[in-house]
Length: 260
Image (cartoon, rainbow, N blue to C red; front, side, top):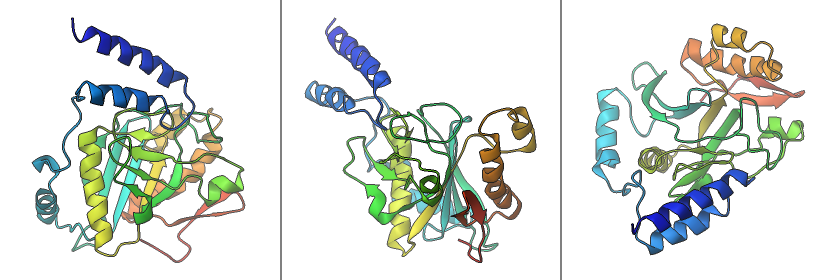
């Protein structure tokens, strides 16, 4: 019976979270403080020092796949499939190979881009994370900012801030991972920047942009926008090299003489 007050409080605060309009609602901090006070630990929480994602083990896994943690990387996320992929450039082919696929624990909103502050939408488009956007002291275990709004978003008057990929499995606009997953991803990114890499592209798609999936959604209001995203998606699918995305005349344009 001791746990019932905790369960009722978590349920109540969960309802408050649903009504909130931020990426990670402020009321969630109250839940954290309560659980810390009562020494409750969610099952996803895992120490950053866990051997599951220890740096030596990660480097060993990459070496086995002819990769290096120092090599350029790419993050791709798919909202519909709730998947996040980490790709690393191969030492031999110089093309990118899939290192690991992670489950996205929570997202919010529907398919389609984020357009304004408080719309609860997870962005879609071409972003990046750099060292300055890492937050090891996040209230949501670990996080990194994807850089929304980017040049394309600003050209369309889109607003919003602090759009993250983070832990704690709660979201109202961000992509939320389990703490175990974000710990491994964060550790890899942090180590990658130590080797001199300045940024890692973060491509967020509504779904895997195959011809079949596009045809199925041809009547969606975001279809024209998705056709533009698909150009960058198709380039990577064909060449296993990330398309370099910039914005011009309200559209994404790709590969203006630069490749990652």
